[in-house]
Structures are given as C-alpha cells and as structure tokens.
Length: 494
Image (cartoon, rainbow, N blue to C red; front, side, top):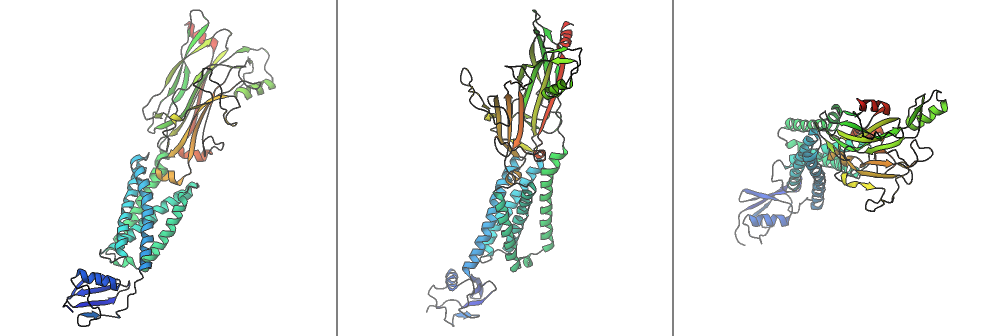
C-alpha cells in the first residue's frame, strides 16, 4: 500500500458527525464511510485506502458507528425550508404591493417591514441548509431561529387580522398551516437548544421584541388610527341663481349651481352623482288639506303644505355633475353650473333642485381601475331608437325602467387587508323610472334617482351593513333647494 498521512476518525457527536484529522489537522466531518472517503480524497489520501489499516488509520470509537439518520435529517431540513419559502412568498407579494402602493404612510412602512422580514427568512433558508448539514457557518442556528421567529410574528399578525375582520378567504388555511409549522419549528429548534450558542441572548431577544413592537404599531397606525382620526371636509350644496325670461316670456332660464370641492386633507373617490330639477304645478287652496292629502303628500315627497294642492311633478332636467370614479384630491373644486329651461305655460308652480353624491375615502380604499369602464346601459346605445334590452334587479327598479350603472371591486388601503378580507363590490345605479298610478310624477314623465351600495357580489342584493361599510368611509349626501316660480319671475324682473 502506498504511504499516506496518518488519519484519525473521531467518535460521532450528538448529530452523528465524525470529525476527521489528516496528519494532525482536522479536514472536516463525515456522516458515513462514503462521505469519509470523499473527504479523504479531497485531503490527498489515495481513494483506495484501506480504512481498517491500523498503521495509518485510528478509529476513536466503533468503526461501524454511524448514527446519522439522513432521511429524517433531510426531511426536517426540507420541511423547515418549505415553511420559510411559503412565508417569504406571501411577504414579498404583500410587502412589494404595500411598500409602493399602500394608500397611507403607515401601510407603506409596514410593507417595508414585511420585505425586511422576507429577507431575514430568505437568509434563514440558506442557514437551514448549513444547520442541517455540516454547520460550517458559526451562527447558522441563530439565523434559522431568527427566520422562524419572523414567520411566527408576521403570520400571527395576518391570522389576527383575518379573525378580527370576520371574513373567510382561502389564505386562512395558509395562516393556520404556518401557525402549526411555527409550533413544530420552534419545538425542533428547542430540542437542539439553539439559543445556547447565541453570544448575546438578551440583545437578541430585545431586537426581536422591538421589531415586533414596530410591526404592531405600524399596523395599528396604518389600519386604524390614520383613516379614522382624519375627517373629510367636502362642502356640498346647491343654489338657484338669478333667472332670465326669454323675449317671448314663455321660458324662464334658471341658472343652478352645485358646490362640490375638497377642503380637507383626505382625497376621495366619487362613486356616483345626480342632480335633478323638477317643476311642481301647484295652486293655493282656501280649504285646508285633509289627513288623507297629508298622507298622500308625505308618501310622494316626504313633505306636505296644508293650503297647497300640487299636481304630479315634471322633470325639467337631470344628469351627473362629476363622472363616476373621479378622484377628488385636497384642493380640487368640481363645482358645476347648469342652466335649466323652465316653461311658464302652464304655470309650473315651484321649482325644486336636488343633488346627491356618494363617495369613499381614498385613504381607506380604492375603486378598481375598471370602474370607469364598467358602464352598462339598459338600452342599446348603438341603435337609433335605443330599445330597452335589460331590466335592473327587482330591488333596484321595476321591470321596464331604464338605467345605467357602474360597478367594480373595491380594494382596501393595503394588500394585507385585501388578502385577509372577502372581496366587496361598489355599485352605482342611475335609474329613470316609468310612471304609474302610484308614482308622484306625471304620466309619461320620470323622476330619476341614484342607488349606491357596497355588496358582497356584483349586483348582489345583500348590501353591507353600515358597520361593514365604515372601513371604506362610504358616505352619501343629499342637498336640495326649492323656490316658487313667482319668486323667480320677480328676480328676473329686477
């Protein structure tokens, strides 16, 4: 046999690794005889060395004692790495979305923290390979422990938010699986007493606690405090200006003004708007109206005038004053002026202007980009006669009523909320009802109205309760003014 340096194979350690010295120098560790031969080959020992040659080989302990369980060890490493990678995938997705696109500063800060946690977990994946391998890196165990703690903390935040929201999403099973995985991983690392090799355990624990506190504070700040502490200041009102009578004294031209601007610090998204002007032919009556008349008036218009007998109303104009889906940033003014033609024959009695707007807070949620393009009509807009082709759901309008509508999914202020909440949908229906015997407007006329809600499904009948809509900052406002035509004529005559 050729000469080679003296080899010493030490007794196995608690993980089954046997240290190997060649010529008095430790060259590595081996799990098995095959690994030993590969190690000796790299150290310059001939590959055909006789491992039983006592003149060149010294075995400290039983030569056949190789207690490593490779399948168990590799399975544990694979399960540990898969759990870390599953968490990394979620954190990178949520972290990137929130770091660049969250609607509030706190949400973006949370996105950065999630990306930092994902980076720590990626380092942990590399540490797993070393820690369940030869442990060539000194602090690989601490790296795995830090990564597991990061998964435990971030997954706990997701799970708590999911439970607090009370919604089911498929991600719930992931949070449960990661919670079980975290328990197993901490138990596994506890059995191996990883913390004993941490050089400064108190500093390590303090760092973990501070990171957790910053994460919790960021979630509370972005999800709870900022959206609820800042009020929306959106002045909204209507007025009738100084009218003008045409030369033939047959038409009264009435300028109307809708005030709508953002004077606060919170941007908003407009879900829908409506303005309408109606004429109410009326006459004075010496004889007071009876109880039956009061009930009829209150049913039709929520108001009654005891000495006024009103005929069914006539629509003089209607429309939208801000496009659905528009964003109103602080300082934006979308006030509108509209001129309405009021016929003087027959006498319209009085003119009523009503406007409504529905909006959501842009610091709490966002309408999908498809909202503006989701416009649908109940009639065929491409035909000459605009034939009716579709009815609205019965809880929106009667069969045959015309309408147009917008709808889309509504997104929360952060991706963290989007994946822990069920999807909701914002809808706006702008309806032109047809007259009937019970309608409060004249036969052949109409009285437009707007219906806005947030529901669990597109065109869903089940609208969210007020408490469920509160996180979106949903609000619908109505303003109105009413003036007799005689008063408008008096102004026109000045």
